[in-house]
Amino acid sequence: MEPLCIAVTTSSRSYTVTLGDGAIERLGPILDDLRLPERRFVVSSPLVWRLHGQRLARTLGASEPILVPDGERSKQLQTVSRVYDALIRSSADRASTLLTFGGGVIGDMAGFAASTYLRGISLVHVPTTLLAQVDSAIGGKVGVNHPLGKNLIGAFYQPHAVIIDPSVLATLPRREFRAGLYEVVKYGMTSSATLFDRIRRERSAIFAKEPAVLMAIISESCRIKADVVSADEREAGPRRILNFGHTAGHALEAVTKYRRYRHGEAVAFGMVVAAELSAARGALARQDQAALADLIASLGPLPPIADIPPSEMIDAMKHDKKMIAGRLLFVLPTAIGGATIVDDVTEKEMRAALKTVGFRG
Ligand SMILES: NC(=O)c1ccc[n+]([C@@H]2O[C@H](COP(=O)([O-])OP(=O)(O)OC[C@H]3O[C@@H](n4cnc5c(N)ncnc54)[C@H](O)[C@@H]3O)[C@@H](O)[C@H]2O)c1
Ligand SMILES: [Zn+2]
Image (tube, rainbow, N blue to C red; front, side, top):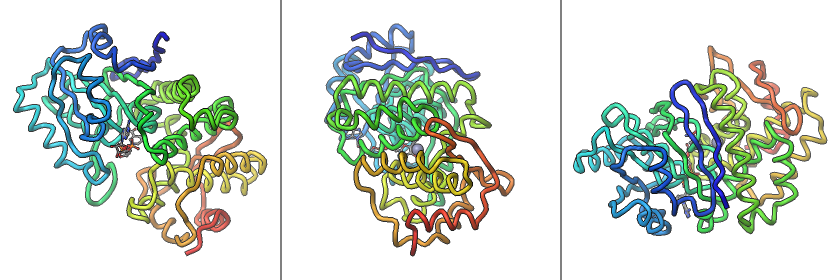
């Protein structure tokens, strides 16, 4: 099967997302075609490298990978420093390409290293989780956490290429896979009724990781992300739509100290909260709200929320990065495949919505 190519065009860089089963076996020639600098350094995690490294090593030649831990707790400057150390020890120069091979943590962290090493070297993302394939590898957000908050240190640094091979998802644990799937639901709900219906219709084929259907949901998601990023690289306008579910989602992650939920799971609750807010205003039909809730419920169990007080959620939202001049931007769905951004959600409405969907404390 010919790989699929999706273009991302931003003012800082234009690049291609190449998608195909077996794409990692063809990585060497793909990079040659793109004329990317020939000294290639791979940053990966011990687990991902053990599972899939050989496939990459064969096509790239005998390069030793730079292996760093990839838990969310490792997503910090100290780990980035280890990548710098390895690059300096190998005398990596401007004519070097850094490839990230792992989930969103490796991509964000090693991407940040590439954006700052020698003021920026070539960067290629080869994402290995569903979340990274449909979301974090495209769009240029790179960075790390600070002890006082998530993703507080970072940059916009578009990659020079993104290579996606859905076959690596075969080894992804079910919970991680589902966490990525909620981001696909996000694309469907905000931007594509077709994608939303596909997840509904082909749920069992998706969970069976059938190549054709995986390719369809990943490529449709990437196309949406690529279009939105091309229209608004720095999230000054339309890109904000993709924060659907993320205001309450981030609050939920923060309140539970990033321990209870995978990011996508927290976003799933966030989408349910936003849909309730919108329906309570009469901006979303109850029927569409129910379709979203049903789809999320059909994808599997989520960790509990019943012990979390709405007041803690509201406090956490007040510290959100999406707060602009004291107003919280909120993405409200208006139909399946459509959403709008508002800045007038009141604390009272928020409290009511949180209670309705099950936050108690
Ligand atoms: N840059 C962006 O625009 C953006 C967008 C969304 C999320 N993110 C960031 O992405 C991170 C989350 O990424 P994630 O969900 O990919 O988590 P992750 O990188 O922590 O990976 C999850 C787990 O899956 C393992 N794994 C990776 N690939 C595997 C494979 N093929 N088979 C088996 N196991 C595999 C990893 O070792 C890890 O244990 C967060 O830090 C988040 O802030 C960034
Ligand atoms: Zn997300």
